[in-house]
Each structure stands twice: as C-alpha cells, then as structure tokens.
Length: 371
Image 1 (cartoon, one colour):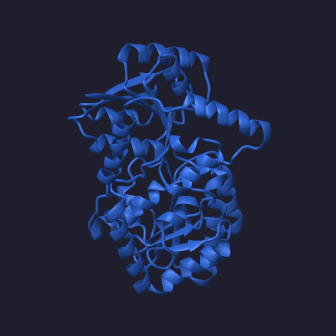
Image 2: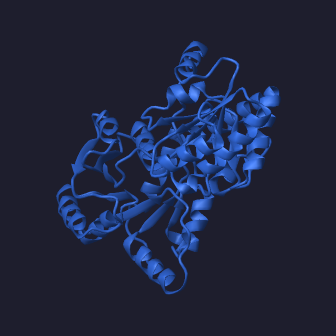
C-alpha cells in the first residue's frame, strides 16, 4: 500500500481545501493510505476528521508563510517518523524542503493559482529552487501547466491531472425560496452570486459596478457576495458610494454553500486569473448559468455562448450586459445552464479527477526525475 501525505498550509477552506476534500471522498482505499497535515485550528480539520480512515495531524508550526525554519525542522522529524512514499503539498514550500531533508522518495506540489512569472535574476533563482525542491508539479489545467513552464519549471516535471468536484446536492424549490427569503430576496427578483475570498484579484469591485449598471435598467435584482477577506470593508464602502445597500448582500464566510448555490439564479466569476475555479464547477453541477471572465482556466472550462458567457476582466459594462441578457432571455439562460451541467458531469466530477491524480501517483512512484 502506498502512503500519501497531503500538507496544506491554509487555515481556511479555499480551492486547495476543496481539492483535498474531493480527493479524500474518492481515493482508492485498497491501494493508498492517506495522512493529512494541517495547521492547528484549520477550518478544514472537522471535514478531514470525518473520514475515519484518514489520519489527521494538526501542527502549530505550519503557517501561511512560504518558508519557516521551525516548520521545516518539525516536518522533517515527522516525515522521518511516518515515512510517506509520496509527499503532496499545497502552497507549503517548507513542507517540500522538509521532505527533501527527510529523503522522501517523491515530493510534489499542486499549484492552485496562476502566478505572475518573475523576471531577470529572480526568475533564474526561482527556476533553480523550484526544480530542486519539487520532483513534480501537478497542474489543474492546461493554463496552470503553461504558467508553471513560464515560471521555469522543467516540462517533464509537470503533470496535468485536472480537477473535479462532487456535484452539489440539489434542493427543493421550496428550500431555495426559503434561503432567498432569509436574505431578503423576493420571489420575482433575479439573484446573482459571486463566490470567493474578498481579495483584489477576484474582481469584486467590477461585479459591484456591474450591479449598479444593471439596477439602473432592471431594479428587481439582488447580488450576493459570498466569502470574507481583507477587502470586505473597502467593498462595503464602495457599495455605500453606489447606493446599493438594499441590493448587494454580504454573507460572510460560508462553510457549506449548498443552500446558497441552490438559491442563486446566476453565478458570476470576475477574477483576474484562474487556474481552475472549483466554485464554477460546483455551479455547473447544478446547471446554473455562468458569467465568467475570459482568463486562464475559465476559458478552458466555459465555451462562450454555449455553456456560459465570457467577458473581459475589469469590464463591468460587458458583465452588466451579460447579466441583463440572462434576465431578459430566460430560455437562453436555461440552455447554457443545462449545457454546463452536462459538461461538468462528463469531464469534471471528483471521481474522474481523483482517478487521473492516482494515475500520476502510480506513474511517479518509482522515484525522482532528473533535474
């Protein structure tokens, strides 16, 4: 049996956390033994501990800082004790360095975001370090693979495994109406929603401006912002300036988005970059119409006007026009939503993604590649 150790440094549930939970729900228990290492107090801990056959270790030494001598020393001792065959990390370079020091056979990482490539000497330095520290990288999309190559990662170290999600549970129309009413949304109002951390690269300010433009033409609309983050106060002040207090609703962090996603009519992604948005895949699983920016993994996931609408990043006017188009043409909204649902079930379910990842595990289990 192959022992896989997964290490996450995030204390919140973001795409990396969802990726892990989808893996834990579907991995081959006959072939793999799994240990998960998380920071102490991580919001993922309860969800991971629900899997009785998965070992969970919480470490006070893991932080979101890229490098920590204390973390490296602690994890090195831990790896020497539990002896993983493969160390799979998510945004935790310290764990990778510890794995090297502990002589773990294979050390790999999944990059869940698109990173801006460095230039000049820093680019060379990062390239050398990344190729030394990581034996392999897992890319969740073709865009992510290209981004890794642009960052100097050797092409033979990049493995495209894609990603997938467990379809969101479909609730009754009565349950959806109850959720809408709980947030003050009337039965005849169109409800849009955006999911994700309230960070600059997620484009919430363009979503808010698009809402303002839509409401000038169609007042019977509401706009949810689901998530929390560093820009929350700034975004709330922006809403006051636009006079949207009655139409834009902050939900804060939501652990389980099932009720909200069932209640929303249209899901919007306004990001500057995406490797592959799990929130969009979850929306697709419920056949929700999608408006997304024409960036990275979004362009791989969505075919414009067939299973969603693509708009340019930072183009609030185009986003507003797409919203109004779906409001005025419910048949078109239904068609692209159904097509999105079919695409998700064909290509992006969690079992399919986990099978692809485990095929990579089997392929690379023989040992480290050359630099």
